Image 1 (cartoon, one colour):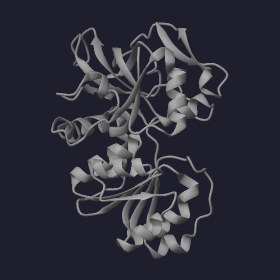
Image 2 (spheres, rainbow, N blue to C red):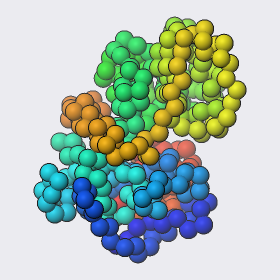
Image 3 (cartoon, rainbow, N blue to C red):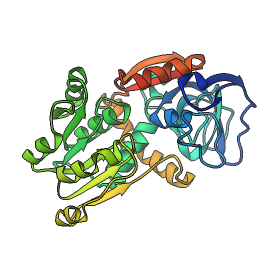
Length: 319
């Protein structure tokens, strides 16, 4: 079987197509013939040697795939179109996945495009709903609104009835987040998102991929009783925290990851994704927003494109 392995972690050229052993599904697992795999920031961090896979996961990257079930079992039939959330190994022709992390592909959506949904949908739902309890009529601030996670968050929160403010770094990306449903787009290169949010009464929830670099400003942007959910560290991992501001606002800071969660937790998240988000996909209220598709053998080019910051939405790989 062909898969992308990381040789000498560093630049995109370290992603090399190799022959690897065929995956063997264990108890409670299913085998999937991969149609497409999504590219995520976690893959980029793993390529750089900064985000190793959890114990037991394949060494090669890839956290989400779409494809067809191979063989019968675990409630699936041979040939069923599915999507799956992985701990790793998605950059391959076939993957073995715990059955609970596999759900039917959304009806009416091209199976290749569906590969851009599992990781983003599970991340957004688990953080906005299960962690932060976002409600209709509340205000959500999304950083990086034109990326895969940001695009999903904007569309889901808008469908939920929340008001969304999104940041982006270019005029065309600001137009994208408005098209996706954001009420306000903030170009962070020449606008202050704190001032914008304070004029609006503050954010009830902030979905943050920046981390340390935005910690103090995010606290200023929160409404009283607001929740800051940190899911990325693009701006660093360490910062000073003004506890007086946190206490005065009666605010909460929540830090989460998805990849290393127990299989049972991931299965429950995926069950709720199927129940709550798939109908929105079927109604075309959520679009996976596929930017570009690369052959698996050109994973290095896909990562170079990801690193360039030019993409909007998801990048996919096809075996």
